[in-house]
Image 1 (cartoon, protein in one colour):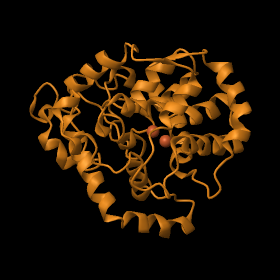
Image 2: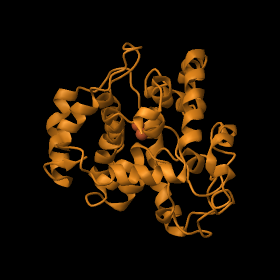
Image 3: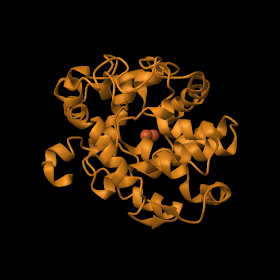
Length: 292
Ligand SMILES: [Fe+2]
Ligand SMILES: [Fe+2]
């Protein structure tokens, strides 16, 4: 797949965190009036706005039903690499942002800030672990996958693209939008068929879900699998595909989201001091090595 795309098409964002900064600008923390100014200034970062836009153009153009199927075939065999959880974290952390090293935290810091905020609120240990691993699927970037196939808001493929998805106009260029199998309200799905029967656009969420599905409780798996499904958790754009069980489980997805978006703290957690706690937690739920 890689060779079909130019460098710009693989990596329009300066850093994959630009997508997340853009999310915070799009959905400012309702609880934090003081942060708003800073976030607004962030939004004024016009280079980010234009690279994020280009990123979404590519994402919306190329994330088709067939593309997702091909990525499932390629990555859900988990035959790329075998690593311990901790080696995977180190591997993920090699994804550093070279354009803006001062303002961006490394991946481990984002994971720790998310999980520490969850822990501070007294949630169960599997919820803390979920926060700690939720972006581990971004290792896909290190396997040479383009940014638009790793991060970005996710959405169902195989049915009409909602107008509620950010930059919906870019779906014009997606071949599925002209394909009558895929461009009706339900497309290949039945009303309220349940998300387990729905194919989502491909990225770090779906990949990690499949890696973890035997190890974590169901609410944790929903949080991992749908944490970037903003069209649903912000706008209920795909209510017609959810079943009652999904709606129950989305309470957890909604609970998780603020920790992902708004847990940045001025003083980063001490990764070294926290390591023993997380080592125990990881060992409680996960096997010694994971397949990627
Ligand atoms: Fe994520
Ligand atoms: Fe995240």
